[in-house]
Length: 491
Image (tube, rainbow, N blue to C red; front, side, top):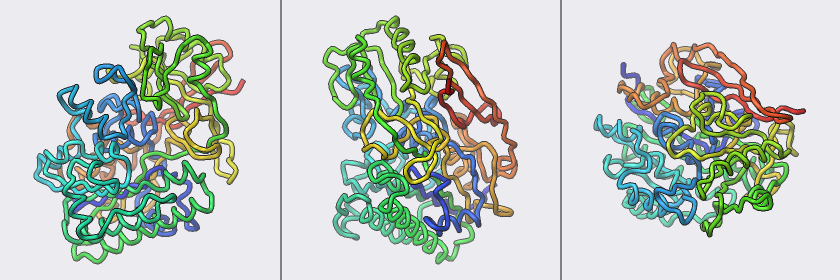
């Protein structure tokens, strides 16, 4: 049954729900208090932006949509370098070599187009994230603006249209104050004020960017959190001024959280020293390497030379290292990986044909960082020590903001502890508009009463070999698993 005339989705990249407080984000805190807050909402694994964006658009984990990392080695596309899904040129290369879309699963945009519903997106993230939210935007007859410019969207006329009205695209400063103000103006005045689509989505690249490079809870980061909070207030005010305000559903979400980095483990160098010549994803060249390695606080390892005995040796080597928190290998078993002591990639929804031979997660815990926030872990590099990172299975990376307001709320406001996550956003949008959810979507419509009352059923799994023991807690909702927290057990 149709509940809303329009749906507005606001995404704050990287926002942790425990940072949504009246002190730092009063407008969002007030919206949450008046709405239905799914406090245990979860991202997917890897808890990376392009993986998560693809899961938001498809309503499903990577096993369905196939974006198995922000970067991943994909020999069917190229054997020369690791594919970087942030780059428009890498996505174009993949689609030309595959003779089809990189994200083949049905998306929210596809389903809206099938029902002749309009969909407008204002995005301030990478070209790859912009692509993933509506991969077939042009074919669907939809509209996507990117603050990164014409090359970062498949509807470049949207950028031309905006620049003509609002002036040149803003400078790229850090924190992203200018970009935040610019995209908010575009969204409130142009999209909501004039285009009036059935579904409107805005994606803020903050506080994620500042978390990475200016640290969680620093003065600069707190300032940009205040700025995006004010941006939300401007959006809510624009909605309230409409004559149909009571019929508009509002969803506020984040794609993942973050934890602070406590030190560096240069895994590619360590692997090379151990006899496995490693090519870093960032090098954009394989150059005869035995393996490729992606990084952050987790990553994939691909066996370029095809020697699966090498995979097994590396897996055992990883489990002997103090820096390693978790190790996964593909397996037909739903829990245990092919190598003794590892978990199966199927357990974390990563068992797509594009999955790597080996996945590692660096060690992390729930201890406090320099600003008193829980969540600390090792990284391979990429941000300053102390800077935020995400991708792994720490509860503070996985826990996301997910709040229903306006016409989406229904009933009494409050907190729901029901199992939920970013895969529920697209099904909820469709449900609010009275449209059926495609079978490929693993999420559910959270606007339905029974969804918000689902009891949490959490179980904890453990495996390991020798002194290495790893543990993963999961919540179940029917056949769907939501990842709560994973890590290495102290010995």
